[in-house]
Length: 441
Image (cartoon, rainbow, N blue to C red):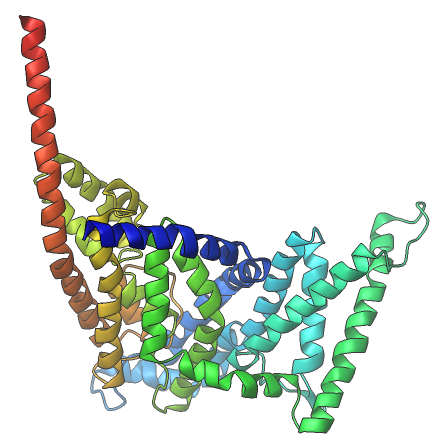
């Protein structure tokens, strides 16, 4: 067993860690991740509005307060939807600006200028004019992949022109603000003269604009991202990387965010239309069923640690339980420790995968309501699970089941580790006693 563990650690250290480190530092991955983080407050607020627009009451309820709320929402639906439409409904605009601004920092460019270039480029290809009106069909989840590609393209084009000094330079006497405006004329022109003709060409050849073409290409990937194998693979990668001390969640979420946002947008559209919610694997599923208390679902472990006979573990449990309520578990990961601790490798990796399987089938069979809202990742799991599903009660039960599963699976490994530590503490106490007696003599 020890030989197998040694081989596993060797593979992680020599193969997986360098590759994961390279991916985690890759400029496009970090830029996409930071772009989504920048857009996150707008999406959370927009999602929160859905609670007021679609209150969690049955249409045939007899409760007067609930009936009044439902009627108010129905009578003022258009006005109530406005904050949602200008936050979640145009999230690709925020993402486009955020990704370009983040990527610009890698090239030492002005983030604001890069963000504006990206926004213009995205509007050129994703906001066609029909009957004198701009279409906003691709401002939500359907346009996410286009927004990412346009942000990368426009920023790289700007960086290329800057590196080769292809710009308009005015005399030093010209005010700085005016000079900078003229400096970006060529990048603006280059973006317009490349993206717009390309969009027209693709539309003429394929009968669809760039966002439609991109969505048709990635549609199989989006569909595959909502399957149980995709969930298990992403969770396993995250857990193994974290066990090696690498922030696997940042890498996985950086890759999965575009798929999650596309699926969430479809879920929200389905809820607004009163149809069945189609997608399971979105951000709320990841946060509130798989990472309860943080990566590895360690909140139940923190509660168990508080009752440990080992002083060290009991202290770590008391330190980690409150942060764990808000999904912050570094005290547990590095204090117990779990990181690189062979006794915790199996439960740390398997528990989120087991919970993912349980939750997936519970949602797939319609036993638990599906996610329709964005929630802050620090929201305590049972509350966040309910909030994400428009305040349904069934996600709370599912979350508690996942916590119980984690506690049961962690318990035998914790007891084995506790026995090991107690033996060490007894040995240390005996050694100190002998030293004291020797000094007295």
